[in-house]
Length: 181
Image (cartoon, rainbow, N blue to C red; front, side, top):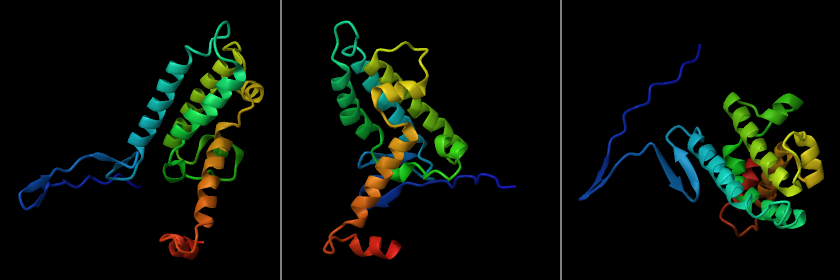
């Protein structure tokens, strides 16, 4: 049986007169990194961004006097999705081949995270279409012309892989990416 290891005590780093205190997590280039690379803080930040975006935009997406469905969809795909899936190629594991695991993720905590991402997209699709809340999610995605969340995450992941694969030979990462392929 595998057990979670007891975390080692972290001590402050003394560099001359400066003291650098140990932290449980740190934000670097927009990513929340923790000591064990578990991505829990990053997932919480992603969900907070999505819910904050939806609460702001829900006011301007009213069916009676709000912006149209086309502009709402553009706003969602142009602002919310890039913010939600920033660095998804790092913090979201690639899905396995079976359909159930493909839709819900590989690990139990990732299944819960993907469900929460689907909830955010469902709320956005409801705002885009103005449909009733009892409408099935698949139908909402089809009417709003949105990809399912699992495919949207894959699209972002493939885009990141394509950018890495097409690096110029003069780029510092070109050799490392070429060796990894």
